[in-house]
Structure formats: structure tokens, C-alpha cells
Image (cartoon, rainbow, N blue to C red):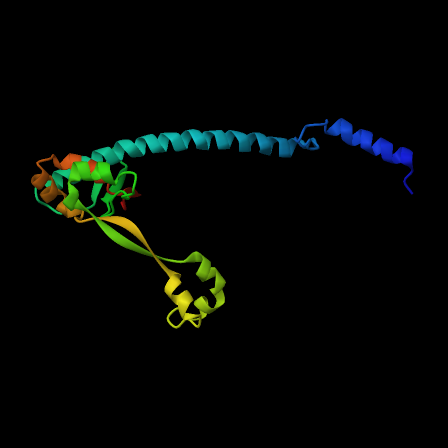
Amino acid sequence: MHTMNDQKAGFAAVSTARPKGSSKKEHRRIKAPKKVADAIAAYVKAKAEIKALEAIVKLRETEIKSFGAKSAVGMIENGRDVESVIVEGNGDSLMYTVQDVFAKVTEDNVADLRLVLGKKSIVDVEVHMLNADVLALHRDKVIAALTALDIPEEDKQRLLLTQKGYAYTFALNDIGQVAKRLKLEVAEVFDTVQPVQQLKFAKK
């Protein structure tokens, strides 16, 4: 049985560990044996090295992609379709690939993109998406049969939402024609639409 003095002592201990007005929790510290302490030191060091290496990889990746982009632009300027190339170094090599996927057009950047690419290059489209509220309301039935939903007709009508979106009217290999029509450099159009670029290890 706890006495009043015991309770007071408990309150005092709590007050000492967590001062009034402080929300910071004091965690109990335990001393690790040498093997675990060495593991902690190795872990912290490795984390720091990984962070530094990731920064280097990002920087070098930008340099390599910039070089690869010049190759892609050259293909377009010569009227060729863009294809993957092997970028060779001193014994090492990487495959540089450009995808037919451009930077996303949003309400925030559409005006700037149209200013460079012209109004014909980006059109308004309707983007259809499922109504999350209705989907959650009838989740089990939707999973069971998407093509024949057994839900009220009113909810069927509300399940699909339509929002305004934007789409490019040209593809990667049309960049040359767009540049010619707008009297721009191919590189300027390429940099504006920012096609997705990838680096992969090349097979030896």
C-alpha cells in the first residue's frame, strides 16, 4: 500500500525529471559494451560517408546527364530519333537514356511554358480520377467488382471526378520540328520540357 509520503516522493521525482513547463522527455541512458560501442561508432561513420557519397553521386550524375543531353540534342538536330547511348570513361561505362516523358505541366508553370513553347504546344485536358470518399465508402464492393459496382446510381455518378489538366501536343522526337516552328534552338526546347533522363550500368 502506498502512503501519502510515498505519493509525495513520487511527485517530487517526476518534478525533478521533467521540470514544470517542459515537454521534453528525458530518456534513460545505458552504457553499451565495447562490441556494441564499436558498432555504434562504425554506424555513425558509415552514415556520414553515405551522405557525402550521395552528394558526390548527385553532382556527378548531373554532369554525366548534361553530357548525354548534348548527344540527344545532336540526334534531334540531325533529324534522327533519340536513342540510348553508352557513355564510356576510363574503363567504366554507363548507358544514358532519355524517356518520352516531359516535366509535368501545372497551373503554376503552364503560363511560362506556353510563353516559350507557344499555345499550340500545350493544351487543356480533362483528368479523370476516382472520388476517394465514395471509393472508401464502398471499398469492399469496388474491390470485388469494379466493372459492375453494386452501389447507388447517384454514387456511381459521383465516383469519377473530372479535373482540369494539361498535356503536351508533341513527343520527344518532335522537339526538332517544334524548335523549327518556334525559331528556337533545339537545346532550348529540350531544356524547357526537361525529358526524364536515366543512367544505368552498361553491360560489358
